[in-house]
Amino acid sequence: MAFENRNNREEKDSEFVDRLVFINRVATVVKGGRRFSFAALVVAGDQKGYVGFGHGKAREVPEAVRKATDTAKGSMIKVPLKEGRTLHHDIEGRHGAGKVVLRSAPPGTGIIAGGPMRAVFEVLGVQDVVAKSIGSANPYNMVRATMKALSKINSPRQVAKRRGKKVSDIVSKRDLENKKPEQV
Image 1: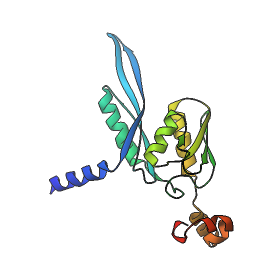
Image 2: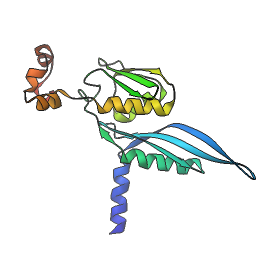
Image 3: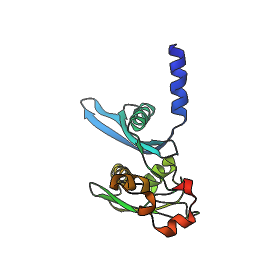
């Protein structure tokens, strides 16, 4: 029985992709010299709209990465994607001195974003996006600002439900002519 649960957990974990964004070596000065530990920043996602990030600290790098990955898998958020490839609308996110601007993009654009943001978009499953980091270049702040921005994205369906209207009332007629009914 326990063996079956372990196999199911491994299958569930295998559907997630994780990216190591940043490793920091930290030293504590003690009586005998310096004692080193490592901090890891990891983003994880299923490349279908779920993404999370985690931070882990340990005396060894692999242990720090494992802790960060576990935290990332536990802090996942669902992000609605337009046509499964880009964002529904442009948005800004802030954390500390870090500010990010995320813009939806036409097909074929690719991921135009800096290092930590690129990792978030890759594990999220976004294929077309333009992003700019303004202010802090600290990877922790950039990832947190990106996650805050992604958590504020709404699909036309969510907006219509909140307002008590139909999706066709929310989305312009021009957009509906270019789409098939099952895409809205």
